[in-house]
Amino acid sequence: MTVSRALSDAFIPELPNYYRGKVRDNYDLPDGRRIIVATDRLSAFDVILTSIPFKGQVLTQTARYWFEETADICPNHVLDYPDPNVVVGTRLDILPVEIVVRGYLAGSTGTSILTKYRNGERDMYGMRLPDGMRDNERLPNPIITPTSKAFDGGHDEPLSGADILAKRLLSEEQWDTVSNYALALFARGQARAAERGLILVDTKYEFGVDRDGRIVLADEVHTPDSSRYWLADSYAESFASGERPRSFDKDFVRAWVTARCDPYKDAIPDIPDDLIEQTSHIYVQAYEAITGNIFAPDLSEGSVLERLRKNLRPYF
Image (cartoon, rainbow, N blue to C red; front, side, top):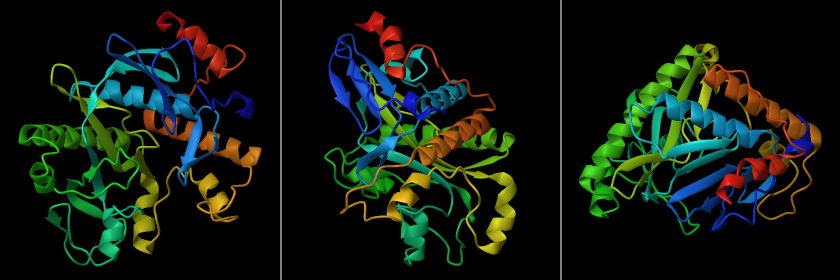
C-alpha cells in the first residue's frame, strides 16, 4: 500500500464546472450528468489531515456493491463507473434533510441518540426511548433520526418528522418516500452484513430529486465512512462487559493527532507514513469484509491522477 499512490487532488482542467468537496472532486457536465471522483483525502477537525492510499477506490467500490444490491429497493443516481474511483451520476437537487437510520443505542456525536440518552434525554427525534437502556443496546426496531443539512457550513440540527413537515423541508409524500426507502435499505444492509459476520449499526443516506421529480438515492451507501459496522462475534461479550464492540477502527489518525495537539487550535503535525499505511489496510479490510470480494488495487498508469485523466478523456 504505497503512500505514493495516494490521490490527494483530482483536478482535471479539461473537465467543466469543477467543485471540490472535503473528499470528493466533482464536475458538472452540460447534459445533466455529474462526475464524482472519490479522492484519498482524509478529513477531520474541519481540515484535510492527509491522504490514505486506495481509500477513494474502497469507498467507490463499496458503494457500487451496495447500489447494485439495493437497486430493486429504490432508484439511485448511478449511470456509469469509468474508473475505480469514479461514479458518473445524474445531477440531483439534494433534499435538505439527511436521513440517519440507527439500529442500536450507539454513537459519539452531539446528535447521536447515545449522547442524548446519556444526558438524560428520552424524547428525541419525535419519539421516546425507554429508561434503563445500556450503551450499545439493540433497539426494538430501527429508527430514523433525521438532521438538517447545514449547506452553509453550520451544524446539523436534529429534526422530527413533524419538524420536517412544519418547516416545509419536505412534503408529506417526500417524507413518506424517503422514510420507507431508508428503512428498507437499512433492513437489506443489516441482512447482508449479518451474512458476512458483521452488524450494520447505523448509517446515513442522502436523497435528491431528479429532473422528473423522482426521489433518488445519491452520494454513497453503506460505506465504511457513512456507516458504523461492528464485528458480530464480538458483540455479546462486549455488551455484557459494557465495552464497545470491535469495529473497523479507522480513527488511528484522529487519535494520533489529538494525542499530540489541539487540532482546532494548533498546527497539525505531519502524519507518519506507517500510520497512513495502517489506515489504508483497515479500509481494504473493511471493503473485503463488507462485500465478500477481494480488493484489487488498480495500479495502472504512473499515478492515480494519470489513470483518471486517461479514463475520463471521453468526457473532456
